[in-house]
Each structure stands twice: as C-alpha cells, then as structure tokens.
Amino acid sequence: MQSTIKMLPLAGAVLWVIAGGVQAQEQVVKIGHVAPISGPIAHLGKDNEYGARMAIDELNAKGVTIGGKKVKFELLAEDDAADPKQGTAAAQKLVDAKVNGVIGHLNSGTTIPASRIYHDAGIPQISPSATNPKYTQQGFKTAFRVVANDGQLGGTLGRYAVQTLHAKKIAVIDDRTAYGQGVAEEFAKGAKKSGATIVAQQYTNDKATDFNAILTAIKSKNPDVVFFGGMDAVAGPMLRQMKALGINAKFMGGDGVCTEALGKLAGDAVGEDKVVCAEAGGVEEAQKKGMDEFRAAFKKKFGVEVQLYAPYVYDATMVMATAMQKAGSADPEKYLPELAKIQYKGVTGPIAFDSKGDIKDGTLTLYTFKGGKRTQIAVTK
Image 1 (cartoon, one colour):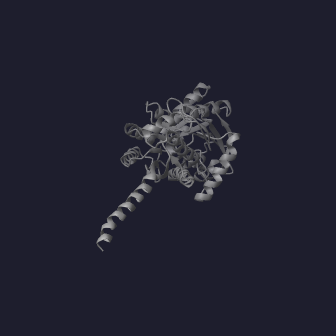
Image 2 (cartoon, rainbow, N blue to C red):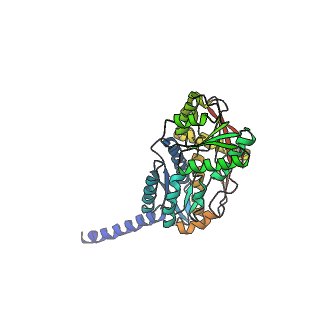
Image 3 (spheres, helix red, strand yellow):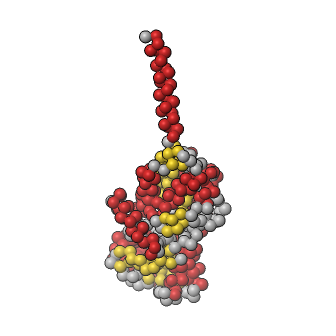
C-alpha cells in the first residue's frame, strides 16, 4: 500500500508531462476579423466574415505547421457596425486578446482609425475592402490592402462617364463617410480631367432614407450622370426616388453600391443598363475558373451567394497564414517582413504589396444591371 501511494504522484507527473508535451506541440494562432455584422450593411459584413471563416476552416483541415509545430487557427470576429467609435473599441479588444493578425475592417471609416491601434501594438492588418487612399498613406508598416484604392476606382469611373457614357453634366452625392467622400472626390477629379462639368454637389449620410430635397435640386440641373459615393443600403432607396421624380440620368457608384443586393434594394428602379458601378478588384480570364469554383464552394458551405468581398477576405487570410509559414513564426514582429514581400497567387489573382501596403497592379471590374441582376461589363486596371 505504501509503495502504491508513492507511485501515484509520479504517475501523475508522467501523465502531466506527456499532456503538457502534446499541448506544447499545438499552437493556437488567433486571427481577428472586424466588419459590420449589425446595421444597414450587415449583409456585406457577414459576407466578409464568411470569407474569413472559409479560409480558417480550410487551414485547419489542412493541418498547417508553422516553424515545425502544428497550429490551430482561431477566428475572433468582432462587429463594428460601420461606426468609427465601435471600430476602435473592437480593435482595442482584439489587441487585448493578443491576436496574431487582423483581417478588416470593411469600411474605410472604421479601418483608418483602427489602423493606428494595430500599428501601435505592432499587429499586421490586411483590409479586404477599405479603399480610401489615406489608409496606406499614414506610414504604418502594419497596414495592407488587397484591393485597388479610390484613386484608381474613382478615377476610372470618372473617365468612363465621359469617354464611354459621353456625359457632359454630372451631379455628385456623397454620404460624408471616409469611403463615400473619398470615392466621390476621386470620381469628380477623373470626370473633370476628362472634360465633364460637375453641375451639382450634394451630401447625405449613411443612414438616410429621404433624398427628395437633394434630388429635386439636382433635377433642375438636368445632369447626364448622378454619381453616389456610399453604400447599397442608401443607393437602393435613392434610385427609387430618382425614378419617382423622373430623373433619367445614368446612376454611377463605387464598390459600395456594386453588390448583388442592389437589384433587390432598388427594385425596378435599377433599370436596364441604368446603373454603372465598379468593384475594387475582379479577376481576368485566367483566374475566372478559380473564382467560379470559390463561389460554388462558398454557396455550398454557407447557403448564400457571395455578396461582394468574401473572396478578398479569404485571400487576405490565406496571405497572412502564408507569411507566417514563410517566417516560421506567428509572432507579428517576425512574420511582418514576410508579409511585406509576399508573392501569392490567390482566388482574386496575384497578390503583392508596394512600399505603402497597397496591392500592386490592382484590378477593377465594371458592372451594370440587367433584369435586376449584376452583369459584368469589363475588367480593367
């Protein structure tokens, strides 16, 4: 009896060492993701989150190793409701949770203030959808994006309005968010440079539903094109009210309005070839098969169609994991240099970053709507 009692602590110690050894072999890598999961553009936020979950699930199914140790990726998802204050609170929460990296935010208005918090903590951040140029102009070595910025997107749309749609008089509306204001400014620059006149400049906000006053003021200017810098939840009702007021101008917008959901939000006011918008990204013919396969797998997994940026979130997550593997470490300080020089072939095309953190040779896709469905016009750079 005496010897049995003595052996129990020893046996326990052996078991503890073995269990500890197993535990030491599996490292948990925390990836933060932030998007609006509540509010009027929650459908876009959920789309982004699904893109991250898809990547995390695939990485865990593969049994990825970093520095010779098997890792388990864990997604810490936060809701910023597209609100800058909530965005910074979510960022601080992820920093406090000691995440290894962050994918997000969706909106420029939340991404930009949050980026300072991640920078100060030394945590790499890849935005899959924030397009305001200011994001990567702050000198933060931790900030990256996998889509073209508003300078490219707005400028391209501005030139298209004049050169292809032959617009001479243009009205511009923006929702006063960092994204909406930024893309509208870049569009106006591109349109003016191409020879158009901005005949009206109006403002709304990202929660507005009544646009009769600003649209009536615009109608008197008889514009060929109305450009809106903002999101689909506002653009839908705006299109309906344009139709009710008899404004027959073409309607243009950036990626925020360029969603599958716009057809439902605007109803028959979306018209045939009335809307022209651009997505900050898009695949050329060589990547089309891979994107089609991704969309099919996404629908099978989540039961819904890709709304907009899920493929870019997926790629951003995979790029971050690849940088960790190349560095042999999930320590932000150690894998950040690998992230800065990454060369990755993604679902959305090749991904490499310039010295600011912007994607090199970012593509844009122009769309219109036919029969209520988003229809591709062209992929351009």
